[in-house]
Amino acid sequence: KINLGETRPEKVKLGSGERSKEVDYTSENRGTRVRVMGRVHRFRQQKEVLFVTLRDGHGFLQCVLTGQLVKTYDALTLTRESSMLIVGEMWEVPPGAHAPDNRELHADYFEVIGKAPGGDDAITNVVQAKGDPQHLLDQRHLVLRGETASGVMFVRDAVEHAFNLKFHELGYVKVSPPALVQTQVEGGSTLFGFDYYGENAYLTQSSQLYLETAIPFAGNVYCIEKSFRAEKSLTRRHLSEYTHVEAELDFITFDDLLDHLEEMMCGVLEIVMGNPRIAALIKELNPEFEMPQRPFMRMKYSDAIDWLREHDIKNENDQPHQFGDDIAEAAERRMTDIINKPIFLTHFPVEIKAFYMQKDKEDPRVTESVDCLMPGVGEIVGGSMRMDSYDELMAAYKREEMDAGPYYWYTDQRRYGTSPHGGYGLGLERFLAWLCKQHTVRDTCFYPRYMGRCKP
Ligand code: 4AD
Image (cartoon, rainbow, N blue to C red; front, side, top):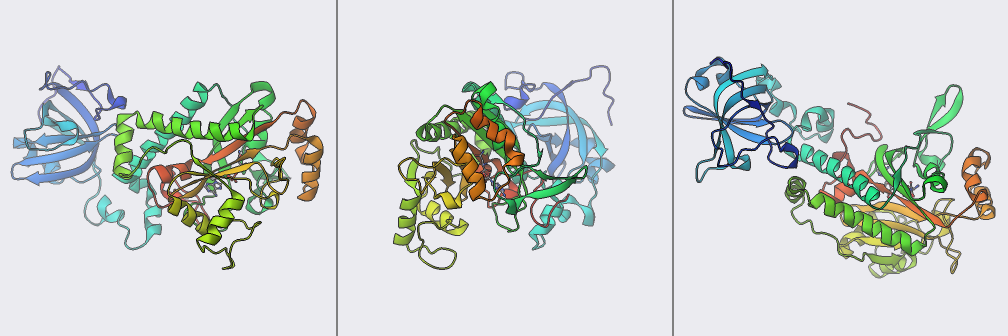
C-alpha cells in the first residue's frame, strides 16, 4: 500500500448526473486525482489488470487496478459488495472500450473497508431466486442493491418529488392527515383495526375525509401519505400498505376534476422525464414508454359495459357484463390492454361506489366518479365529486348503515359553508408499475406489505 501523504485528494461521488455535480471531470482536466468510496458492484480480472465497478448510489465508476495493487491479498480475494476506498486519477476510457460515463479511475491506492463474504454466502448466491419468488422478498434488503430494484427506487423518489413540485406550482397546500383514525372511508371489509388505549381504532384507508376538512382554510390541498388496506386477495396490484397521493379541489365541476388529473399526471411525467438520469432509467426499465397523449380517452361506465359485451369479456360469474356489475380486475385489465392508452372511466353506479360520492344530476343512478385506467396495470386513480348537501350525506350514511356519530367532523363541512368540490387518490406503486413496466406493485415499493408478508 502506498502512503496517501499530505495531499489528500478530493473526495467525489461516482455519478455524472444532477445528483453528482461534485464530479467535474471532463477531458480537459483528465488526470484529476480523486478519492472515491463505494461498494463493489462487479469486478473482472484480466491478466495483470483488475477492473472494479464501484457503486455509491450516485452512479458507477470503473476503477482500474494494475501492477503491485493487483497482487495484494485484498485484491486477490476481492468479493462483490465489499466496501472500498480507491484513490487514483480520472481518465477517459480508451477508444473502443466502454465504461459508465465514459471514464475510469486509474488507481494508485485502495483499501477494503468492509469485506463481504464469498463462497456459498456470496451475495450472488444469496439473492438467487432458486425458483421461489418469496426467497427474493426475504432477501429484499440485498435485492435492492441490484440495478433494476434500485432503478425503480430512484424513479420513485423522482416521481414523488415531481408530485410535490407540480402541486406547489399549481398552488396546492400540503397537509399531513393522521394514520390512526376511528372512521372508515372505503368500506369495512378492508379495515385494519387495533386497540387504541382501550378504544377501537383503525389504520387509515385514505386521507380523503380529513383532506376535505382542510379545504375551508387552505383551498386546494393535497397529501402524500400511507394508506392501509386489509386486502385478503393476493393480486399483483394490491398491497396492505401503500403510498397514496391524494388531492381535494374546491369550487370545481366534474370536468375540472378530469382536466386537473390529466394536467397533474402529464406534468409529473414531464418533470420526471426532464431529469436525464431518471429518463435514462425509465428507458432502461420500460423501453417502449411514451408520453400519454392529451386529452385522455373518456368513457362512461355504461359504455364500458357495452364494450365488454361486444368484446365478449365476461364478468366474474362468467356471464355477459350487466349495468350494475363491479368490473372485475381481470376484465378491466383486458379492456385497458386492448385499448392500450390511458382511460378515464366515469359515472359508476351509486351502488358500487363509496357513500360520499356526488350523484350525477342528469342520471341519479350514477355518480360523478372516475377511475383512471392504465395499460398493464388497470386502475391507478380513483376520484369523484363529493356530496355537498347535508341532507344527502345523512341519507347516504343511512343507506350504507353507517353510524353518523363518529363522522360529525366530516358532516360539519356540509353545515359550515359547503361547496362543490372533488378529489382523487392515486396509488403511487401502481403509477410506478405502469411507468417502469413492473409486473407487480410489490416491486415498486421499498419493502412490500401484503397478506402473508410483514417482513423484513
Ligand atoms: O379507489 P380507492 O379506494 O379510492 C380512495 O381511497 C379514495 N378515498 C381516494 C380519494 O378520492 N382521495 O383508492 C385510490 C387508489 C386506487 O386507484 C389505487 O391506485 C390505490 O389507491 N389503491 C391501492 N394500491 C395498492 N394496494 C391497494 N390495496 C390499493 N387500494 C387502492
